[in-house]
Image (cartoon, rainbow, N blue to C red; front, side, top):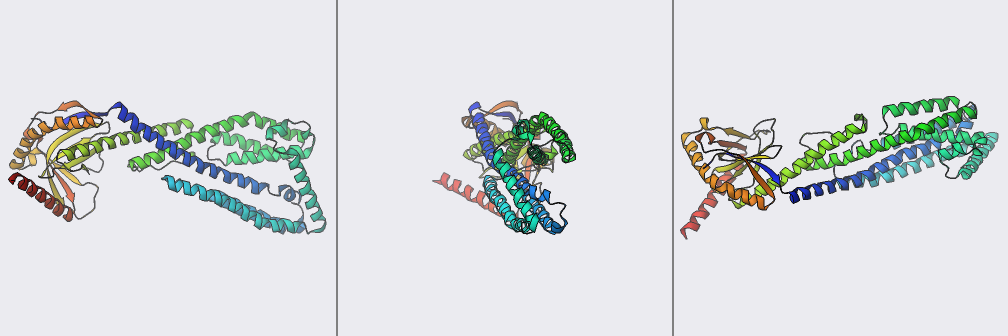
Length: 457
């Protein structure tokens, strides 16, 4: 005979490795889906740059022409409108299931292209209107032709190639074009979610200098551009590391939320809420451990469910004794009587099993706490004695439970098996609906009658 059985549960190595492998595969699948989403989101800023650059040479050359300011104002207004649409179309929160993420990605990609096409259709009539203003129109055509010529000559030159190509830098328009490219790149990086405040401040300094020297000498601009190239790669590397860490955090969070049901009500943090890559990695690891523990405990609980059913008990239903529980309590009711097995699984997989009297009480109101435990001192003598006797029966049952669990890959290592005692007699009252009480009584009565009929044959 014995009282409560307290054991340390661990999974056999192959089972643990299988569960962890499946969990990591799920994270990788989510990561692929979220990467596709984030890649599409990043293209939005590319469309912003396209809009800002669209006919920029023409517009810049006509800033001081008072006769056409109303046209330029309309163009500026259209540009601001569509830049705002592009930047505002990003979802504030990544969905928490794969199908929705994939649908959102497809829709976002189509939406970006559609917004840009709408912009072109709306702005082009105003550009054409500029060309109808006599001599101004001739200048517009000349500038557009010159811009087209430069673009064709440059081909796909990088910023570095423009800055270090001495032949191209002999022309003012070439160094100004390089400066514009650097401005675009700086603005795009400064608008990134993955840049640190320190690197943002560095880029802002270069942007200010380029703006200050835009009307100055080619020598001044070239010096700023050369200095920019010195820090460009380190800033880019920092952003890539931050983005990669955040994307891994996102995938891990989504898997954690799905696996645990987000029992901690933890919101997914935004990139700007992290101060460093190390902070992201620390939070990612915390979520991963929590998810891994939940996966293991869920597997243990599923195997206990199966074994207890084989032993003549129902599934282990979750019960909550207080508002701030630690670990998980379950109750497996007998199918033929009012006794039950109370099982507690701690956060570090300590498992306690004990036999208890099970009772149900009708509660109309909704509540988080759904059970109450009554100790031996507060029980009727009859129930105390009954539960003391049942401890002996449970003593014979427990080794069989241990054996069956081991066959399913769950090993119970003895920590403390208490001696039988009246003080271990307990009752657990579950708070349920009136219908649940009636249904349970009918079920017990039907099964008891079936057993009696079987014995009578």
